[in-house]
Length: 392
Image 1 (cartoon, rainbow, N blue to C red):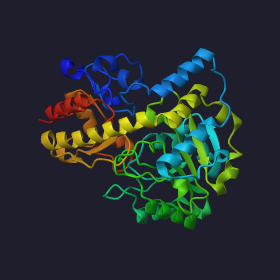
Image 2: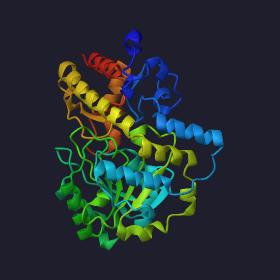
Image 3: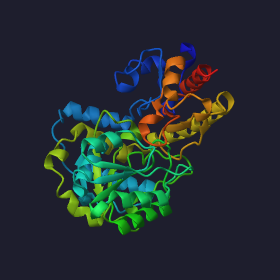
Image 4: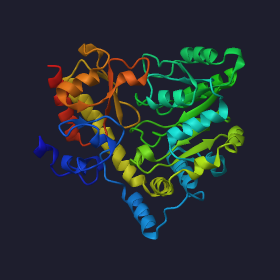
């Protein structure tokens, strides 16, 4: 296996530039959580070198000793320009943004602005596990609105959840995952407009986690929540973290719609000051100068989605997989394999492949696994081979 996984890479594709031996030298969570005989295709770290414009910006800052507190508006300006180029949206106003240490920290801060302890927050499950952890830590009550069979928002279910979220007229929020993690669904403009209308009708504030917005498949179109009619009082969290693999260089932006601008005045100063200055520099460089690198990554991810679909059809035809329209993640329905609620445990124990367990994603996650596609094609091929042997 080692010889196959260490063959030369395609210089144009960031996912094909590092060998397994180089990756195992990394000290980050993805590569250190499990023993060396395990292929780690779980947490959303990407097996890529750092984009050159980002690396240059960071090393230049270090050379200057520029490692103090963050300042200025370069980050939101870079994001606004990126939004205009990529999504055709010119409504991201720099003055309606606030620095946050990272997206999940920003989600909690946004929910504190629009709800109080004990209030409800609606989520579409199965969904990113830290939603549950963060909401519990913030003393918010979770109301689940499961996705439909097609893995898209079920509006009847969502409306019912909104009603259950506001007993006695208490404040409530809807934590929208857009694009959706783990399914990779990109919500359409019509769907987001319907969300805004429903939220207005029921007095629910929308907080959109849009961290995966840059990572969209060919033929799909990301629509910022704040760009749709009726979303004027919404809040959004964005960053370059998922698009350019910057989880270790934290820095996010809380973006407010026109009617929510006043909410930003209540963000504690310590939240913005607590954002990493180097992180802000890295994210700014990514949005401003990292477009060519991102395009190469997106092309590689498209190839990996097709590869995974073909491999599963050949070696694990009982596994249901609908390639996502976004994210670097694949949501695999393994229920037909008869492995119980946690097939990830079986694949780890018998196949030495680490995947995310679907049970951690809430209602609807049992019998599923999440696989990280942001790696070399050879590693995906080897992982599916091992998974198939694990259930043979």
